[in-house]
Amino acid sequence: LCSSQEGRELSPQERLEADPFSDMNILAAMWEEAKLVEWPKPGTVVRQTVVTAVVLVAAVFFIVTLDEAIKTLYQTVGLYPK
Image 1 (spheres, rainbow, N blue to C red):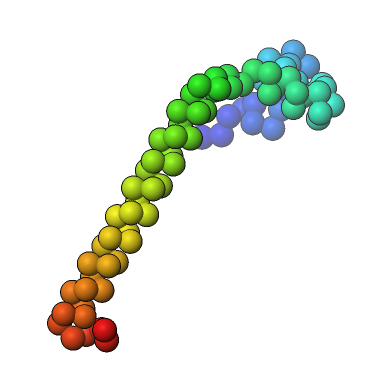
Image 2: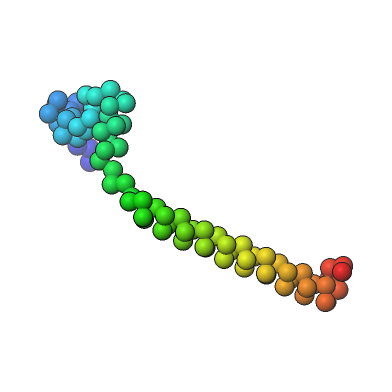
């Protein structure tokens, strides 16, 4: 069940293949990793922000409207004082 290579150390070549930034200091490695990220374009960020704001406003409107409707219903039935 156990691999015969389970406790074996990686060779320098294997370590470099597994993690090309392993020999760098942490800040340089972080910078190199960040350069590999595909960052969103400004237009995409603006579009996603607008979509999020619209969804937020719609959700708030729905919750407030539902709250008022339930309050009116409870007041009509007499479960909530006017």
